[in-house]
Each structure stands twice: as C-alpha cells, then as structure tokens.
Image (cartoon, rainbow, N blue to C red):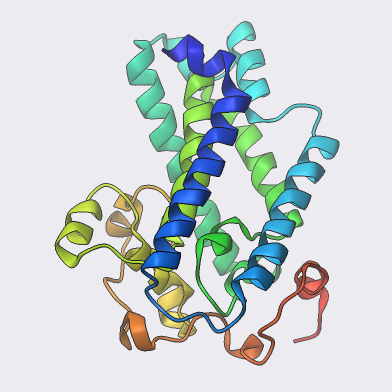
Length: 267
C-alpha cells in the first residue's frame, strides 16, 4: 500500500484536494453554520486564486519540494529516522506527528512576531469563514513554510510516504476545520480528542485577540491541550461571534491583489 501511495502521489493528492473541497463545500452549502456576509462566488474566486498562485510559485521557486527531498534523504541516509531504522509503520506515525508538532509551533510563531504576523494576518482578515479560508495564505508565508518543511525533512529523515500522508492531511483537514458548518455537539466533543473540528478552530478566527491567539492546531488538537492554548468556544457563541480582524471589517470584498498587498499596507 505504501508503495502505491508513493508511486501515485500526484493523483492521490489532487483527488483528496478535489474530493474534500467538494464534500465540505456541499456540507456548508446545505447546512451553513453562519449566514455569509460576502458572495461565495467572490470569496472562492479570490481565495482559491491565491491558492493556485501559491502552488504555481512554489513549483517555480523550488527545484525540489518536501516529498522529493524525502526521497533524496532516504537514498543518502540523511536524518534521524533514516539512521535508527524503526519499523516502517512506526516511523511513519512518528514522522506525521512530529511534522504536525512543527506546524503547530510555526503557527504560534507567526502570531507572536509582528513581522510574521503581517504575513499571516491575510489569513485572518477574511470576514467570513468557510472552506476557502483554509487555503488562503500569503505567498511569502507559504515560501517560509516550505523552507521549514525542507529543514524538517533533512533533520528528521521521514519515510517518503509519511511526508505525502502529512501533506494530504494538512490540506484536507484544513479545509474540513474551516468549514462554515458544525458537527452535533456530542460528536464534536469526541472528535476533538484526536482531530481539530470546525467549531474548535473557528474560535481562532474570532475578532477578539485573546481568542484568535488560541486553538492553533490544524490537524491534531493535542498541542493546544498540552501547551495551554486551547479555548473550548468563543465568548459570544458561534452564531454571534465576529470573524476576522477589527481593522478590516469595513473591507469585506477582498480581491487577490488586495490580499497580496496587505502585509505592506500602512496600519
């Protein structure tokens, strides 16, 4: 099975992206958690426009991405997991969890340092919250994130399939937990034990600063529990909370060009 995933990586990743997008898009259209304040067509066109631009940019700027570097690391015996020779399944689990741990701290750091926050706030400036928000990141942030991923691959030496699985999870679960939808409370409570849910992550997009500095996890919720960054629910409730950032509430129609320029605009 692992060989099948490695051999068919592009098709599998694209299938998960499209499948998750369609499934979550239907879910939030049929059972929206909150009424949208901006046209979905406008937001999807511009938010996913950023996503496609980021994908194109990475292909141009990086001769090799995380999966390709994992192949080279394995061939040359680079990285911790290529040196200690654990059973493959155990190595995959460890690698996926540790990659998620790094992404959690990357997210925290982008909130803590003003120069990085200028990039990351493009994600938070969205005044609505839906599946397209999960794919909306500034290109410079994406480039910095890729550099970090490459460093992690070199240091950790994860199995190639672990990198593929992690990238699929990161993309798919980010779309899932940015859904403008919600699970039944009893199910949500159970799922929060092992996965970040839409109601858990929506708190992170609250206009209230104390709330958007919590619930940093994308895939696994454990890091928020362990490091004290977990908040169960927004203080005003999911129906009445304000999404986004105070300074951009008046800028509801946000174009690709405005989003790209956002880090360089005066406050």
